[in-house]
Image 1: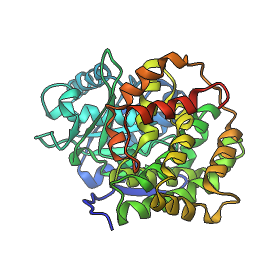
Image 2: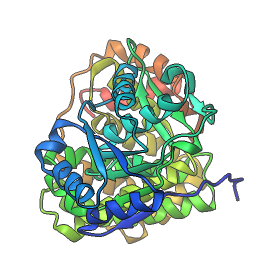
Image 3: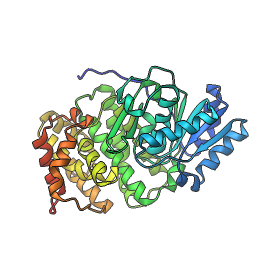
Length: 373
């Protein structure tokens, strides 16, 4: 068994219509002034109006910051922090996808601690207490609602910075599958594939342990049972619930372990070519699984995951990805050395079960980006 240093997961409130319990969550904290961090798309979907109506009816004042952006940057976090200072909230609510939750978590760092987000790369560097945080995902993918890390892009270079602290973990995650019905199909597709990558990478990373492995296995069971309906746009409420809960449990798995080479190689694709994260990690994942399959212990984990599938894991994964009908970005092969060099500096790559170096990363990119792949 691998050594472990487990952290508790948030309280998870799961089920259709459970957004209505948001006021009770805040009342249990003694909170009366909430800042809802979100984006215009979530406002247009009506989710913010519903959340605000529930809070107002309970006598809780709610103010909305709608400036979240995809892949939030240091500047985005500081804008949210500056807005929050004007209203002095006693609780933060991240309502939306991973970007809204990361923006809220990043804001929480800087509301009570000095400096910029780059000062908090790593874990446990925030010295002062943070506000209570409530996470309400409207997508089923990132698992950010169950992680104590804010993922923030460095200004200028777009480098992904993982800034974590136990105080940043949500107090409560409200998992209401009704909220995921508003996802555009392309968002549902990419977030579902991202969640699948989280389950598979956390299951085999070098920091895996009994607790994270239990989360990874259960998340994979839920995600694999739902993902085909999600990718084809035929998911009903129950299936969306499976995907949402599976994504959250994959987030718990990451929180108690780590990720690996698929994320290490995906992040430079996003930084250098603006490829959406879910697409980038999906491009790399099959090739990383083939690489990791060379380790007998890892091959056994993959085999166990495939017990209830209709084919070996890699075959099932490739058929599933094909079902998504994703566009293939045109990336010049001449960029591979630059991508491989950037990937060598990615934190998650340190935890891949097969150790990575520049040559191995180059071969992964060649396999994934060649015209015939």
